[in-house]
Image (cartoon, rainbow, N blue to C red; front, side):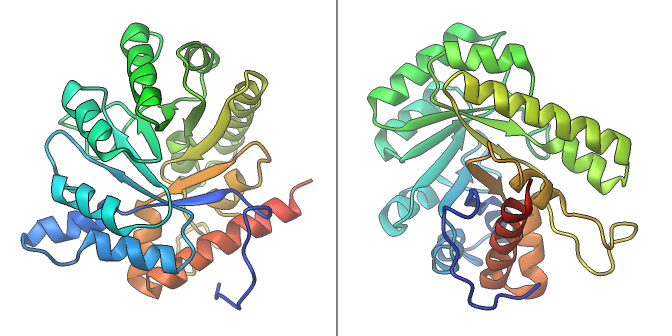
Amino acid sequence: MTFSGTHLTAMDAPLLGVNIDHVATVRNARGGRFPDPVAAAQLAVEGGADIITFHLREDRRHIRDDDVVRLKACIAVPLNFEAAITDEMLDIIERTAPEHVCLVPERRQEVTTEGGLDVLGQFGRVKDACDRLAQAGSRVSLFIGADPAQIEAAAKAGAPCIELHTGPLAHAWWDNDPVALQNELSRLQAGLQLGRSLGLRTHAGHGLALTQPGDAGLAGQTSSAALVAALPEVAELHIGHALIGHAVFVGLRQAIADFKSEAIRARRSAP
């Protein structure tokens, strides 16, 4: 897929949030300042990213506090600050005042976020965080699984948005398991529709990728990014690892154009 100059608009597809965490991961592997995730974010915006997403973790394994300050100073599109619900992170978010916040679960041992936030199990804490961040002027989203009980709890907690975890769908796609893939896609769509019926803005993300030549067993398949982008309830897609991995081969500008083009094609061809 190549970018042919097609005019990309929010009317044609979900907004694309580009997660720059993995640029910071490469930098931190050697220390120092290169490659700079803020420079990557600037290039992503020039390439058409609608939102810049980043996750400031407790252990600072990729994004660092200085990155957050520089992102706020340099990036013109909305920032989507992913964070766990801790007093430290809530304090930093209040000082940073990002346009968007996505509250996520976090465990030190995990390589990446492995599941959705348990809103039911920590309802009071989640509700307090939603109230606090709303007062700070940030739009709050909760990163949860496509579980009806969790979606209903998210609405009751006062979050205006949810981001449904597409990891299980992405794994089924990579495993080339059509039965599991259809089950996950149906579950995702039902969750999105429930969220919409409760007045929530509905987003999706985690693990979504493009089909590329040479992908064993995946050639000719609809990409996982396209499968999710085609769902009319998806207002935003947040993609990081697969997009940055794709950029290794084609460059960051082209990678963003490829993902946006895929989303537009999927939404336009959806029944």
